Structure formats: structure tokens, C-alpha cells
Length: 478
Image (cartoon, rainbow, N blue to C red):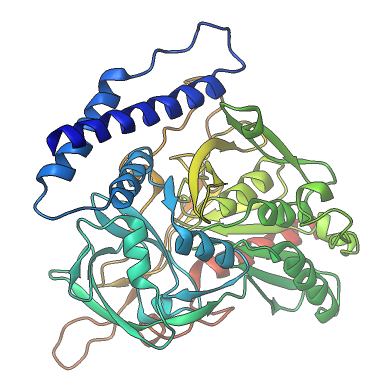
């Protein structure tokens, strides 16, 4: 029996060595012959020995497919928080999710120390309405501890048939004991662009996530704002707070709406030629297919010069940071809020056989001036903290730099100029009403599950943005 297992191990060793040789040759095809590193023979031998030991000595029989799949999972999850193996279901969910409709709870998550951390709850979803916050640590799904599950396994458990319920046990900074949230799963239909006249002459556009049609939806929102306003817009607020990102072409389309034609939006740098891109405000970089009509060509001319403020916070990640960084570098908008999340890495989805794929980090994003977003984020020109409620601990903002095994920034000291020193405005403090037991509580507008108004008088950051735009208008008029 052991001789047979040893024979299987040798066959597997040979197969792995063959795969490694082929990968090794492709990885160094553009380098000098003979410069390739030798194959890790000892490590491959150790792998096959572990495989054989599990097959022969583990307490229960284990299928070869499971062992190989877990090995692949381990290889990818050990690289950084965003590389992952996608089985058939996960690959399908990813494809559907980018089109703006999928089943689940509506939270952007990552893995940290074996637990699931909330990056950002998505607006108008069960997670957002239940009161989950950025930085929450999910430790249990129903009665199943999260520790020991992969991120894909945890996400699978959170997804399910719409209407079915799941209980999340959450640890939150400032809370003495774990919190429990019972959520009903739903078909998540995300309206990626929302807009409204904040007041006459001042427009407000909120982008909740970057999807396939975000660019054209934003173009429609801009056109509608100009139609609704009696006079040409005097100012515009672009709200990217708690926007976890999404598709790159959506980010380029949004930035291109406000930048001159062919202005650089972002560039990427990686090891392969495919990972080196320069994306400009030109239609080939934001249209979904060749021959499709340019949805930005009929925008009002004033949109290229109207004074703008972009709102960001710790939940603004990836594509949101690309847009904010581009508008900041081109001095097209004033960035206001708090430091963004700092996810400046590019994930490429590489399809494999059997409808599976790997999501692999292949490059870093840089702003037009050469600043790396990775593990740093976008520093606002004007720092405005969220309004806090006295006696209530605010939600903890998780950032890329807090994640285990996060990718380094990639910039060497002196490569780029430092961010300009931002202006900091003090945040107001509200006193929460006291219930009968004498303990401080949250005011009605802060109550979890209460849908926020699109433009609210209680939104301190937004109101500061509008005040700034009005001040700029006064200065220009003089």
C-alpha cells in the first residue's frame, strides 16, 4: 500500500515538476537564457511527501481534488489579501456582481488573521440597513466559527437564497461584547449612481460602486442636473465615500467626464508587459465594446470647468481612489473628507479549466503624478472628519495597510513628491439623547437601518463641501 502511495507521490512530483518547468520558462521568456532560477526541487519533494502522508495517515479519507484545491487556495491566499482561487460558483458570482445584481448581504469584505473584516457595507443592502460598519470583525456565521474558513468559504456561507436568514456575530471596537445581526439575504441590485440638486445651482452625485454601466449612468445624472437647474451649475459634489471600487473602465469613464480629452487618469506597473498600462480620458479606455456610442460626447460643456469637491473616507477604495487621485493631480477638484482606504493593486482574473479562475494581483495603480495608492490611499486637500456623537464610539475605519500580508507601496524613497499638507477642519460633536436608563444613545438619524437621505442637513462633510463651493463662487464673482 505504502509502495503504491509512494508511486503516486512520484507521479505527482513529476507532474508538478513539469508544470513548474513550463511556468518557469514562460516567466523568464523575455530574460537572458540561463538567468532562470533553478526549480525548487526540495520544496516540491516536501509537497509530495505531505500529500502522500495525508493520503495514507489522515484520520479520514480525503479526495485528491480537495487536497489540490486547498493547496491552490493556500498558494494564492498566502500572497496578499486580494489574490484568490475562484471555483465555478465564485467565478460566476464575480461575473454577475460586476453587472450590478447578485445574491447576498451587500458587504465588501477581506480576510485578516483568519477572520472576515468588513471593508465597507454597500448602500441599500441588508448589511447597510442592519448597521454593519467598516472595520467590523465577523467571528461567527450562524453557529459556524469563521476561524479556519477561507474567504471564499465564508462568502459562500453569507450568500444564499433570497429571503433566507443568517446571523452574524461581530466584534466592534469600543463594544464590550460581541454584537449579533440577523440579516435576510436579498438579491442585491445596486444603483451605482444617484444624483440630486442639493440646492439651486449646486449638484450632488453619489457613486456607490463602479460597475459596467457606471460611466454612462453618471453622464445621464450630469445631464439631468443641468436640466433641473434653472441656471448653469455653480458647483458640483462628487461623493465617493464608502465606495469599495469595482471595474477599472467605470473609474476611467467617471474621471473622463470631468477631465480634458486624453488627460492621463492612471497608469499601472507590474512585471509583465500586459500589466503596464496608461489609461487616459479617451473613449477606447472607458467604452465597453468597439463601435459603441461615446456616452460622454454630449455632456454640457460646463462640466469640464464647474468647481468640484470630491468626498472620500476610509471606505473609499480602489476605483474610487483612482478617480479622486486623477482629479486631485490635475487640480480639477478639491478632495475633502478623510484618508481613503489605500487599495492600489490591480487584480487580473485569469480563467482556468472547468469554469474556474484565479484572481491574481499583477500590478500597482499610480496617480497621474506618479503617487502610489497602495497601502497609503489619497490624502484629502481638506480633512473633514465625520460628525461624532458624544458618548458613542465611532466605527473603526479599516484600511489596506491594516490587512495582513498587504502589498507594499512600491515607491522608493524620493521617487515621488510627498502629498501637500492638508487643511484640517474640526468636526462638530453632537450630544446624543439620553434614554430612560441614563446611558447615552444614538440620535434618530444615526439609528442603524434608517435609510439616509441622499442630501441631508445632518451630513457635516457634505455641508462643508457645499459651503466651500459657495465660497469659491463668491471669490470668482469678485
